[in-house]
Length: 232
Image 1 (cartoon, rainbow, N blue to C red):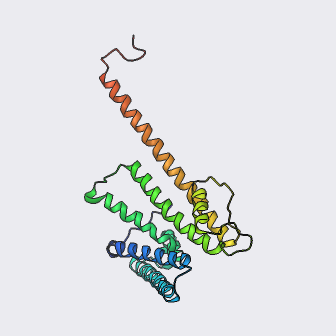
Image 2: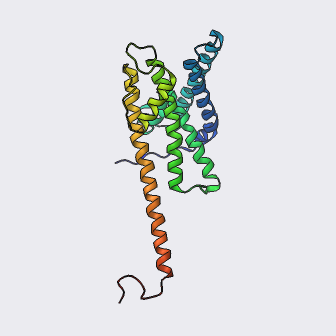
Image 3: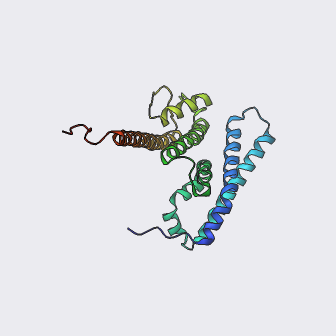
């Protein structure tokens, strides 16, 4: 298996410089998209402004992607192969707010010292990812479902309830998507839910085992020689 190519210094500097602006742009994209989906009573001028901001944000993502391809020196096909998630995010900009998780990681690692333990960071990142993806998924499903024939997801509250149940892998079945795009979104949410649940459960279990191991080592260190279980 080939090693992943090193990131050129120019691309690394570009990524560092653009991290915060792209995160702000991602939040603008998500906010304007949400207003367009949920703002049924707003004027056409406001909705047109939101649409313009949405497309402008998407254009920023595309320009950033093109610049990174050029700076990497890999060519388009190799860049897509080694940066598949970045390509998916350009195609599906609703996932772009996940850059907030990356920025949060940089804050935690300020001065090369994480302020949270590894297990706490995994659980915090999983929670942030679930919240962002749940909100984006609820918006997407609501957009395609609320006016569809035979749909059970009629309000945004129904969509949020469905997103929470899907991410938690509960699957009550009281509200379900009926459109092709809604069901495709559901498949993605199921996969994300399983991955996040596994990450949180595994990290919490590892933290418990580590805590119990340290406690046992402290107790063993306090016992006098020959006072251990099984000692004669």
